[in-house]
Image 1 (cartoon, helix red, strand yellow):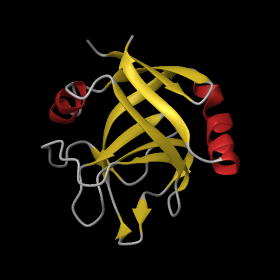
Image 2 (cartoon, helix red, strand yellow):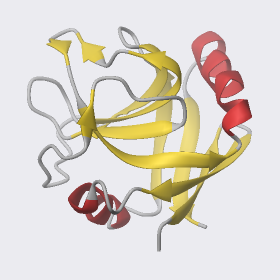
Image 3 (cartoon, rainbow, N blue to C red):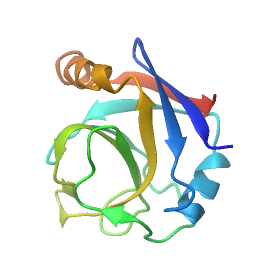
Length: 137
């Protein structure tokens, strides 16, 4: 199973898990499904939304990690110098926090609805937190 459905705000997207590139992260995330949270707009990173997850431990290290996720890529920061989080890029992102530059595991990619990501990002920026649910397709 690698196909997922993301419902964020009023938008719906399809995505695939990057099981070949980040097998441990994908396996750990699958255990969390259905995954429900709120997305808020990033503060330092650019054009993205994120789900702050505090000290939630996915039990993974870094794999397939990047500082520059592309639009439609989701990355998991497993925690260390900053809190655990999932970030969804909708435009240019240089992943960082108040602690400085970070990198996260690219583990999921939006495959359908990419053209609506910027709308979701702007809505989150101007209207505040939006609900998100990630489930099997």
